[in-house]
Amino acid sequence: MLLKLAKIQSKEIIPGYHGKLVHSEQMSIAFWEVKKDAEIPEHAHMNEQIMHVMEGDFEFTLDGQTNVYHPGDIVIIAPHKKHSGKALTSCKLLDVFSPTREEYR
Image: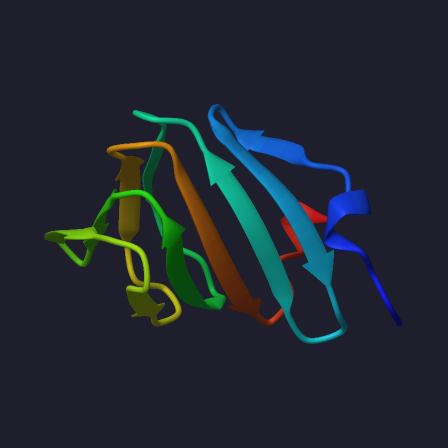
């Protein structure tokens, strides 16, 4: 299957987080455009997640430890680990989830 990122409709999942979402049988990938100061509240999910900061500065808390991540930084988030984040600047993030994030379909 071939998809064109430019043709995928963006969805605002939470305020300030606009994602182009792609799903396969076993994983989901999210291309996020995040507005400056947009926050994602602390949460956890059963999915393993890999986050890649592509543009901007993103403050991210994982298991109570907060760091600021920059372009090229990658964070691996184990299933069921509490995490939250805030865009310190406008950001572009790439998230990969396994298994599929059904609630994002």
